[in-house]
Amino acid sequence: MVVAAMGAVAAYTWSRPLTVTVAAIEKDVPIQVFGLGTVEAQTVSRIGFET
Image (cartoon, rainbow, N blue to C red):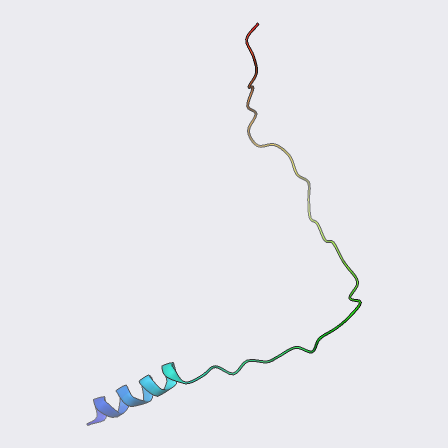
């Protein structure tokens, strides 16, 4: 009986709808670009035509 009750509680917990917070719509949001470090090649490939 206890196992069935625990199973029912677990099933209810996993199958209930999730609470979701909805954000408000904003207009004219400024664009921001962030970057860290540098970009460099890790592998050099020499591809070309033989002459």
